[in-house]
Length: 277
Image 1: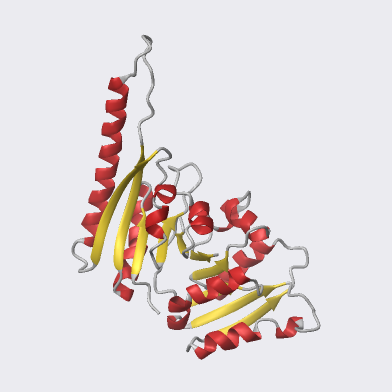
Image 2 (image 1 turned 90 degrees about the horizontal axis):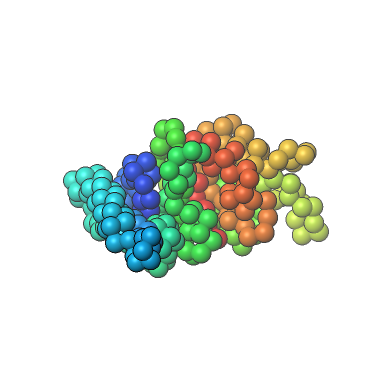
């Protein structure tokens, strides 16, 4: 299994550099076709004091949008033209101007989507939540700062036995198989008649091992510590350079990724996050 079609979501110049620094090496690694997508907002028609559309404002807005799109296209072409990769550029327009929202139809035909999570106070990035929950394809979220590794030698897989966790684990197989080590982290496993906490994770570990992956299991009790803090700590302890997790719909993890504690993990963790649903 390989990622043969990769989509890079480029919302602004800050995102573009980091997304492409991740997307191009991965496309080279998997010999993928790389698609760059950027969207601009359609000009909103304002009326002048006389009640007629302000055509000058519309023209200025259109010119600014075109200039931004051309600048991002130039960044994309400059980084990829000498790579020898198959690639294409798609410049889109929509009322939202969000490259993720506008490019949904394009990304659904991809094997992997790569987007960036912005830092607080910077230009807004693409709507990562929409990509994860509506695209139906795995999303690799690039960290906003720090060294950007794409070798992914040590994978940390968050596992709770749900269908979302299973989807994420098997969607990430190309990375897991080639990694030197994959740790399956299970937090607060239930003690049931079918499975004891001590045996949690053994079945998924065995399944991944049959693909040739080097897999270990770590079971932890939270003891009142927030789960997101435990994940952050485990990333540091293990030296993981890729976090793999399912995007659960109505749980702590959705609040973690797109709620009030987003900054504490995705915006501070120095690793990429592979999300699938």
